[in-house]
Image (cartoon, rainbow, N blue to C red; front, side):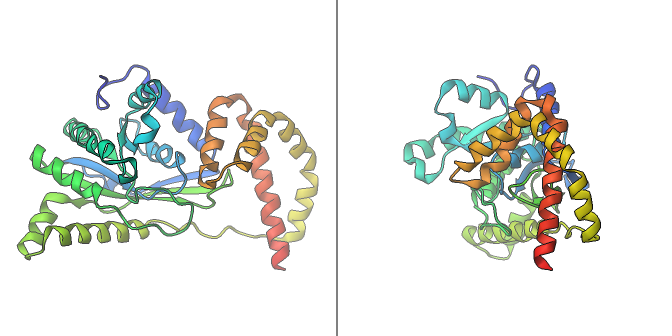
Length: 311
């Protein structure tokens, strides 16, 4: 069975293309705080979770090297899909709703996560355990710290949980500003020793770690500054003049925006909108210039309309 931490043929090329595709969906991506990722131990990345599959694609932007991920186990039911996911360095993690038999399989996954950390491959676990396309974040699940403690005990080296903030100007529209921010890491072994010396129970220690991680992630998100407004009449003139270009871009990118429109209109969970956009870009790279221009013009028109409504 393919080891997620091992070298995978052609993976680097796919990773590079995936990163390029991710950037093609955003107006800008700023990456801050990479110096906070420790170099002297194993690293578990702990981002917030907002836009389904787009979030791990954003995490991959922080490094050209290997990063492994955990994902819900039900998407691994098809053996062919499971092989592809494993090649992409994704491991299944069952939730209680999947049943006890599935949850029991998590111990095998935890052993593989420890192997990743032993081979200096960072592992990413979304701290909330589920996505939500809203500001703020849900409570942090303690599972991420249980895995970190298990790794620290087995490996006998420092294991860090590193908070990451994935910040989107808009959760649904393309060509908006995004930011990836890395915060101060939590070293598990030292933290446990300190809190145990204070006489805290194991349950209290995990509660403290979850609260600390949540506070550090919240300090990293919802910080994209408000856009500039500018002169409304000049922008209105620009909007009128740009209409022929808009028509050309709409025709040139029809194979992206039309499937995107149809699929997202049927989505029950709108947090997948950015993911669908990403997949369309992944399939049709030749049409990126047209679609990028189209979405930027749409945002220009939307912002102008919003400014006129505000008066």
